[in-house]
Length: 280
Image (cartoon, rainbow, N blue to C red; front, side, top):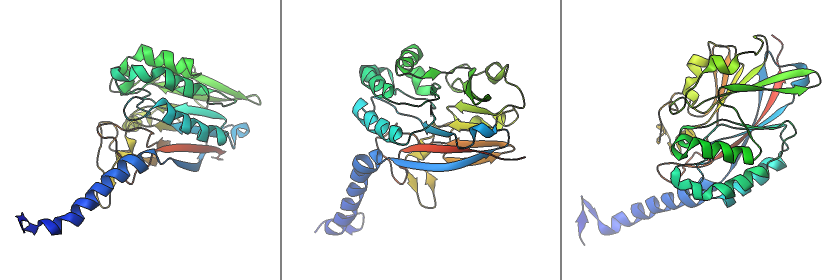
């Protein structure tokens, strides 16, 4: 029997089968195996009337790259069953120009999302690669308020919670000072920013909570190694919750993929964040 680099062909069969199995699992199972993560985040400046206010966060759909409108519809059903108060999307609706053919099916799915206090979105770097005007139009047709260096106020029982959207750091023209202009400094302000690693700079501003995506959590995570498929502005704060000075950051792992249509030990994520009033 022939040897390959010191191993017989027979000895290589289990290793080859194991590798093939991992690839198939990563592409066909885990890539679409949705993880609903629920957590409570206390905020010092949160008005009492917004205690128990629930935000559904998702990111990085990358529609058109091994992710269809039908796949998105399955996610929408899960989100609606969770009954969030508001829904936030942190960018990369489309993957590239070639994704435009899937735009209408994606818009139809987004339009089915319901939240009594509205739906809000920002653009990601891939949205600029696909064509920002197409993406903005699609998100708006899907019922989202697209925040580009601007903010919106959610009203509840006489109190206000501010949502601010920052343009993509890598592809857009971000301007946080413009975005937060007019927000009282003592107000509770939640920032939607596609790239999480901007948090170090954001922590110097009056922002209570930053919600981000972009990193996909690394897509492939290995024991003792961590995230494998990393990206600029998404390496330092690649997934989960962080505290930077007084700023709390949460990075969502996203729904879709880039580079390779696989996920391993890094399931696609919907996050349900319950806000809590935290006495200073």
